[in-house]
Amino acid sequence: MVLDANDREVIEACQRGDWEAFRLLFEAHKDRVYSIALRYCGNESAAMDIAQETFLKVMSSIRDFRGGASFESWLYRIVVNLCLDHQRRGRRLMPFLEGLLDIVEAPAKSVLHELLRAEREQDVQRIVGTLPPEQRIVVVLRYTEGLAYDQIAEILGCSAGTVASRLNRAHKVLERKLAHLRVRGGSGV
Amino acid sequence: MYKLEIGEVLTRHLGPVAAPEELWERIENPEVLASVPTRHARGRALLALAATVLFAAVMFYPKSVEVEYRLPQHNLTLRVSKSTAAQPAEALNASCRLCHAGA
Image (tube, rainbow over all chains, first blue to last red; front, side):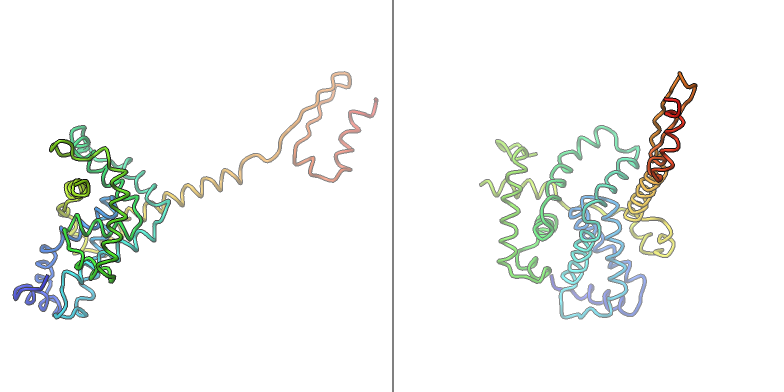
């Protein structure tokens, strides 16, 4: 996760306030940021809020970024912290209300085949959403981003052993709750 | 083997997704979009509305329970409400004497 020469140039341009460079940076990382937010929150609107907040924070604090460190790790730390903050802000009632708004505002595109296609994904997403935040973020970074234990440890500021332990605990819970989605006889879900 | 399966399920269903196009608009015009309530803000508004409705229901719900006594032999109707019952005993006694005066 070390920046190549072009990335460094883009970041330096961003640090000088170049808006076009920021657009390039956004295009390069938008899917990654949005995916983490969506997989962590399980809610498209909340993911949009978090992704927006992430890039606004990147824009406002990119001058503080030191080129020696990994930009991706720095970006991951911002989005992870915003995900955890979002969780803390709307602890119990807000997800329910936001879910209610999702139902009320369900767009016309949510036709039956779309629902069926998304059903299993939502099922997994919902069950992952029941994990404690510190386990959930590890699962998201591992399976959405495919990060290695040491990369996750660097982002979360803990040891690789802690990451392994949290992932192991998450696996145990998910094994039980996702038993109905296990791969059977080579036919995946 | 089983952990591999769980890993496969999670990889398959928690994969990366494309960010919506409007994300850039939200970053380019944060001040314009600040006036558009976010999902979280709308949730809070809904919560506030529910609290207001609950408060109004509690405040305006009739607190008195009327009990109507019909005394045909005296051609009188006496209504005693909960709020009347909360008044001093003399006031209630005065009402009762209307019925029991001839008894």
